[in-house]
Length: 143
Image (cartoon, rainbow, N blue to C red):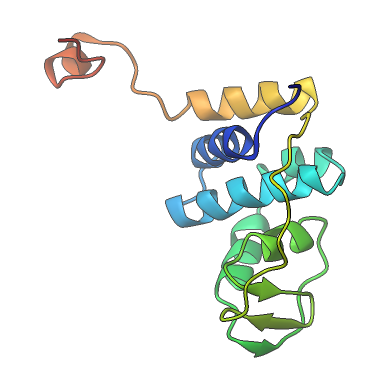
């Protein structure tokens, strides 16, 4: 098999979003949307740009807080992927959390190396630095 699994992609993208400063809930939605975005063959550079875009937190909050029923989704390169990451069935014009999303086979994706490197760099910002204090508090604990 080649490529990254949906779970691998989501996990790294979520950690990267946390390292870029997104709160946990937004980072989780960004991570899931990243897998959807890449599986749909969309521009991976939009994912990289999103990590430094000051509008992303408000976009994710708006999408995550959609009420059931008709709505007008914002026009952004990640909108469709964010909608696909929501529970239920969501389109740019309607959200029904009680209707299952259309079934899709888990995708394997091939993120470009520069996106993977960016995600690793951002994710590294979440790691506890090695120090005597971190070791004293069970950082890097061993048996």
